Image (cartoon, rainbow over all chains, first blue to last red):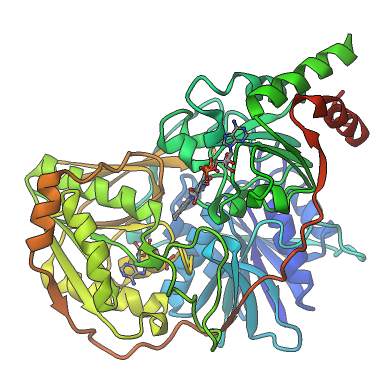
Amino acid sequence: MSVLVFAETTGGGIAETSLETVAFARGLDAEVDAVVVGELPHGAAGELAEHGVRTVHHATGDAFGAYSGAAWATAVQAAAGQSRVVLAPGTPRGLEVLAHLAARLDVAMAANVVSVVPDDELVVTRQVLGGSVLEEMQLPDTPALLAVAGHAVEAAPAPAPAVGTVRELTPEVAPADLVARVVSVEPVEAVDSSGLTTASVVVGAGRGAGGPDGFGAVSELAELLGGALGVSRVVTSLGWRPHHEQIGQTGSRISPDLYIPCGISGAIQHWAGCASSKTILAINTDPEAPMVTKATYAVIGDMHEIVPAINEELRRRRG
Amino acid sequence: MTDVLVCIKRVPDVGGEVTLTADGQGVDARHVGFTVSEHENCAVELAVQVAAATGGRATVLTLGPAEAVEQLRSALAVGCDDAVLIEVCEPGSYGPADVAREIAAVVADRGDELVLLGNDAADTGDFQVGIRLAHLLGRPVVNGVRTVAVTDGVLVARGDGVDGVETYELPLPAVATVLEGGVEPRYPSLKGRMKAKKAPIDTRAPRSAPAGSGRVRLLLPPAQPSTVDVLGEGPQAAAAVVDLLERMGVAR
Ligand SMILES: Cc1cc2nc3c(=O)[nH]c(=O)nc-3n(C[C@H](O)[C@H](O)[C@H](O)COP(=O)(O)OP(=O)(O)OC[C@H]3O[C@@H](n4cnc5c(N)ncnc54)[C@H](O)[C@@H]3O)c2cc1C
Ligand SMILES: Nc1ncnc2c1ncn2[C@@H]1O[C@H](COP(=O)(O)O)[C@@H](O)[C@H]1O
């Protein structure tokens, strides 16, 4: 059985979430191929081979210069051949490209997949309701399409790396698939200017911050720890902080080594965005708040007293 | 004049603990309220804005049980002009392809030039109804955008891409799926609420039997027993916190 992974690149190589998807695909006990659309960064094919990818299909052509979900799906379709399963990372583009493929082939697609039910390659387990519930879902069609939830598995090189051949591909793209195409990109420093999704430490603040002026100490703590500030939906909807700082089901998903949520209750939709944090240190007045009971560590009390005291202690020890 | 159809989905409003129905096929919603996704609330706001700016009409649509009229009326209260209910007894038996097919039939019938949906539904999170709908209608689709506007029959949509803010321009008719964060949904006015209460609902029957969602069953993730280590109370805990930060190697 062979399976195909839609792999995304970042400036330097293959995106981490795509490598996770490759690791997930290896778990299917299959020959893993991958498709990269557009530019193939130097060394990216080697990186994929190291992670066990047999053939890298590299789709190029004018049609892929600017992003279009429909056109990219054509490239994936061209590479898919007889693949039993096509996988994509659960990123905006991964999901979009896969959905185009699903619509075109009229086959089922599962999003937010965390595992395959053992002994039944046709049934996957996926997260629904922001991860608070799991669903077992049947995927009877070929190819089965699945988008893998972030951090469902860890990216890791294959025990035995593949030889890794690159096959160039120049699929024909229908003009209709280029109608909805990016016409311009306004580079913001980075959309995720705070580096929220990649930070190893994130300090969070919720309604407990009390108002737009309540973020001084938490911002300072984030800075002292070389981390980023993230907030809850209440904070963005009240206009206290910008939306790009929001963590959760409809915000960013973070996976830092340490997350310090202050004055955040830990509603399911918030938890959906921070559940993959390695360690959580909750600061909350309420010892029964879900964020506290789910945390690794907690300090009970007013964040406006506790956070400045931590900052003070950090500065004192640094001298 | 651009007529906009915006699609919303009634979902259980789960804040804390979730319980499942005895057959494991659904969420036990006897003690929870219902809501729609924040993405869809933003799509409703954009639909109302586009209709107002172009002199068209904004119509809200849902496929759901009779009770979903509640969600339709909320959208009418914030400015939608009309509402369509595709009434089904067992919404759970409609998979994303089924929903897309039913919406497509309504659009083919009504001819709305722009269809807005959420990026993903708050319960099943399938991330695909909008794209399937566009394919069925033979229309272009932009996905996960935060704002849309229509000028001279051209849809201008903007959203966050990997390299910055991406702009799409495409001719109508088109489909767009919306992510929360580009607009702030308005609150209903008293007048809006009064109007919504009396507005007629265009109730329709589904065109065909659903193929299904592929759901085998739902299950709850294993409960993690609380093992939280309380480092202390109040500012006196600061020393213990910094000890921890140092042990973890994050307090360089
Ligand atoms: C479809 C949908 C999508 C959603 N998406 C998201 C999302 O992406 N992200 C998100 O965050 N939410 C999301 N929500 C909202 C979510 O359900 C919660 O309403 C929200 O997360 C609560 O924010 P909060 O914890 O800041 O506020 P609250 O729930 O009000 O909690 C405040 C907490 O602060 C504590 N506190 C108060 N004062 C202090 C103090 N001085 N010091 C310390 N602690 C204090 C309280 O004990 C409490 O635990 C979504 C909801 C829906 C329906
Ligand atoms: N039953 C439904 N009725 C109306 N719109 C729906 C329904 N299900 C999904 N949608 C729309 O499709 C979007 C994406 O849903 P999904 O692909 O299921 O994640 C949602 O945000 C809604 O806008």
